[in-house]
Image (cartoon, rainbow, N blue to C red):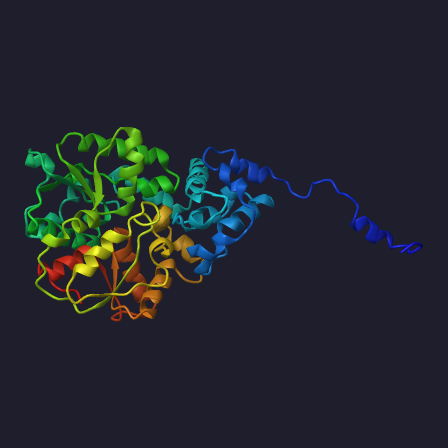
Length: 412
């Protein structure tokens, strides 16, 4: 090669250069926030992209992309990316570097909320929760109105004035939303049929606040938690029963930090332990698939209790979707997504709930069974939006149990 002269431009290509390609100030603004440090750990392997429900629903989003864009100087505080994460936890499950979006997103969102940068529909849910104790904007006095439909005694603790074995924390959507109320009526009848000594807080209950916390309103969460802890501490009970996996997550992991610690069970766990006592009189000859809620499954490791109940129902055929258990899909309601449908639908080719409904139909299901109050309304809307009305019913497991016990009118 002696005597060969390379063009000067070629020589410049191989000259050492100072590392000045990136302005890391946008990334450092995120990683300086307590709880958001792990964003800097990302080394772009892309494993999160394959399991992120937002990415697979046609969104231009994944934790890998969040890191890369921030590394290149885009402000996460001003980016739509900040509000697309549903905190489903599937990325953390596969991440070899433990980039923890479940910690990162709420921490960054909290600062964005403080600066007034959150989407208007999310701020509206926050305001209603602060004013009324629920994100639907319903008055507290109506929180126990669903009890009138139950047809069985449902004691409200302030009037009951006696200890109970089980205090049932009903939550907002099961108290106010029409389909949530259906599930509450069904569960009340199942508990009564089992002879459970239970009561509810009724108007003394406020939203558990976990979704608001994950959406960036930790102050609102603390206010709600302190109220609920005060109310619960007035009464004697052995088990705190919850309908909502998000409330389950809060009572297991967050309320104890504020002084509220009780033995807590999701209703499927409580009933699965007593499955032998359930008296089924009506076979349900349906092909059913089950959607694992992110906050019951990946966040809290409960996969068996719902399946134990479904498998106990005579005549029912349980078929698993490809994405189930640890790798289950997401309905899109977590992390504040329940109140961001307009925001997210403008940035996705298909809503997450719509993608999941189509998947259930691909497996030949007649019923999509759920155990989270967010999911009944989300999936029923998705069935209609995808033009599949009449092909797939969406039912809470409590409704299926009550139907098989001949305690409620059949929906399918």
